[in-house]
Image (cartoon, rainbow, N blue to C red; front, side, top):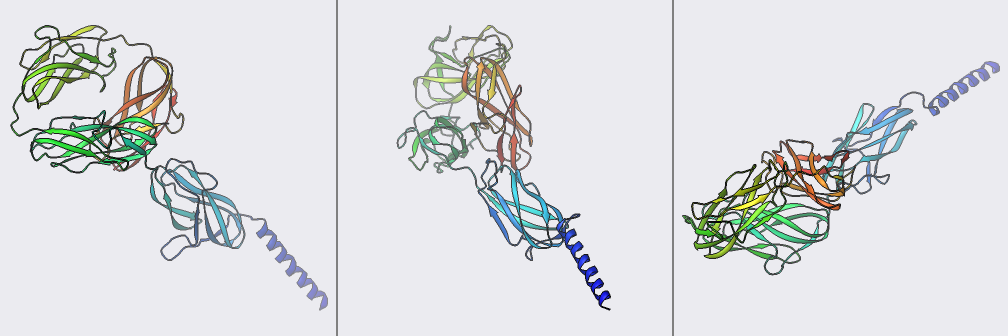
Length: 456
């Protein structure tokens, strides 16, 4: 009997020992559940680290969850990918309640609250992570607290006529700390101006504000552009209904235009940009509206529209549109139904391609400024631009384009006449299809970088 008792005890002890050994050896995949409350939130949950837009996450960014393990072994707990980042951890776990740390991977794209789901075996739970947005920019308006300096209003303003995207004002901002900006003026005489974007570098920079509303009465409306460090003002002339056509003549008519200036560079095959203009001098004898256009020659035409509120000598700017076809000297004549003049324009041959790299390659474009609003179903216009920085090692021609994402893209072309660090403006085109944050990738040769655009 004693021999049987000892034998039974030895067998029981040995079996229990083997069972413990198997548990400690973590044979197979563990089973169990993640702890959560009655509505599915991970319980308890600890979110560690700071999560900021466009900041690569490190080992300081992690979450801790508890799991109840019913069978020991290996585990692989992973979250879904939200807003550009996720959480993951693998390892071995024993039977019982265990706290597991999952580290973050990736880089948040937009600010806000992100909702994740963690999975362990057949169980899951939910957790929320708050992502901080970029800091607000610090800047002052040039001319504050008096008249905005270096500012001007564009477009025609007539009582009872709603403003269009052509009704804009440009002010100069002295940026001392990079970040996002949002500017919206008060509504005066039925109209206001607004704009938002990101300053990615310091220094003096132009800011485009687009007008909204319908002017109520004819007057010189003073628009106050707000800023916590001091406001500045800019006048906008609102004309009455039935404002008639102006009467004026060009300096130099009926021969060659005098007191005119060709602005910008013109190269065969390079699309013209905002800087391609011609400034001409006119003598106004009767105030009113005007529409000026030239003949189309060598793929280019010049035009302008607006109003004269005072008589006398003044200048107007004709905007160029089109793509030069050939390298040659071409004559243009403004056509207004009155006595005109003519001016000539030199188009240069296209130089060889430039050699340069995009700032921030192959990661986030640095610095980058995204201008304008991006709204679902609203076509992009002249306000939707992106300013990139490049480092030119060999001057020459360039064309930079991005991928098309969510229905829109950016592109720009031109000629670098010098080497070194320079800014490039890419014009947006297309129509955003849905809301969200989208990653845009400009590319030139093998050089590329990325920047986000938020569609509202």
